[in-house]
Image (cartoon, rainbow, N blue to C red; front, side, top):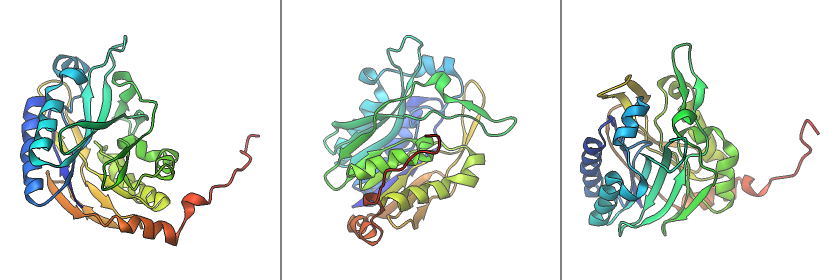
Length: 278
């Protein structure tokens, strides 16, 4: 199976973003990709909650989701929409950060709401409070794509190894980590975290990312780290997309998952232990 990671610089105009993604999907399919992955918040990168409230839609009426489902069906490919920012029915008005697995017929095969919210102070001037605008999910999702079982995660989830271990022990062979990573944390932590999750689980880790300075019609500008990556089940970096937008295609040899786990069967070696505060 050939997988293609789309590295984007999405702005705050969902219509413009989706046309960009559709063009890149066609490019990826033209290179033989049967599985295409986009980054977190593919449809809208914005620091303005008011702007998001004005342009975002709920899942049943979202034109971005409809367009990408139609494109996947037209191309006959599997599509991992890293995530879409979507309105919800929550009384507090918070959005969902929702990842979708789309089949080659355009059907929604699975969806996952990001569990862990990026509420951090990276530096004195760079602070994020994702939970102010997005409500967290509460369920792990394993999806069967036929060619592989896929454990779905999003961005900050990468810092929580128990989630990825649970997915692998449930049968995941590929872990998806679409992201819009901070440049500061990206330089220090992005690659080591991705490699660690692959090594711990014996999974392929596919991590399509947002990159660069994101155009904005309102609110502050946001910059992201880029460096979309594919990590092998043995922990090797098979691809690093750097910082330019584009398409990165990699061959996945699914037999390597079983081989890595046979060499180091750590997923079967869990032992109960007494916690330190007991």
